[in-house]
Length: 291
Ligand code: NAP
Image (tube, rainbow, N blue to C red; front, side, top):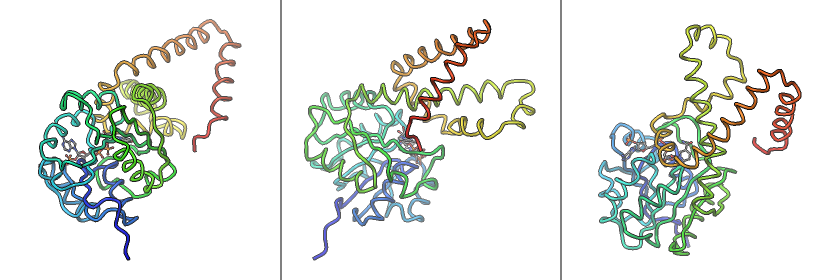
């Protein structure tokens, strides 16, 4: 007897890097019978069909969710509210809805505004995996392997919906962890959102210098490593800044104070303070499991 796949009809709204990679991974495992894609532009969706990432698509997300047992909203954070608003009246009664947004407080607030409460079949999620590339062409099935996926279920979240979303992500090879919404946003502000602000600002500062051509000509590997993430989609990161404003501002303030202290140490020729900063950082970096 053949085993049923975990998901009969998966609807992915936003078939880009994350949504496309999830669909690919589930297909590769044979854990989804049909994938329906949705997005604004037909170009990307046609490519998604051609690459075998989705079986069919609809540019109207409300039509795309019809009959889906799992709906994954994988659009930029600023588009989540309008997308949810559009699909809610057309969802199957038992459909489980999840998202992949990089901040969670704003998504939960969007959901509360739309429903007036938290529906039991909604499970907020965030895969801690990605690249600086966008669109379905950048997607690949192995993206989530040995990566973490954070779920931030709420008191109202049904255990069955939570279990299904957890299982879906585990099938991609990810380790799934649960976290509170605020805690998630604080942790991600520190580990992901702040570093993106630093990379974008550094490149922007240098790119506006008069002798920028000369400067970039001599940029070595370290500069490339540090600034790779400044190639990420500006609109996506704009949305993340707006969505996680408070937590991000706290981290920027903390970092700015430390950078000012380092500048003071350099100005005052306080060599002990400079060395102590770098030694602390090196020790911390060497003890991190990052690769
Ligand atoms: P992406 O590659 O640009 O994919 C987003 C997709 O959403 C696009 O294919 C776009 O297709 C579609 N889209 C955009 N606006 C839409 C709208 N208003 N209605 C319907 N579809 C829309 O971006 P991504 O990197 O996969 O990011 C998607 C989500 O994952 C974001 O919320 C992001 O915060 C989160 N995330 C990203 C990463 C990362 O490293 N990239 C990691 C974890 C989580 P059309 O242009 O055809 O509409």
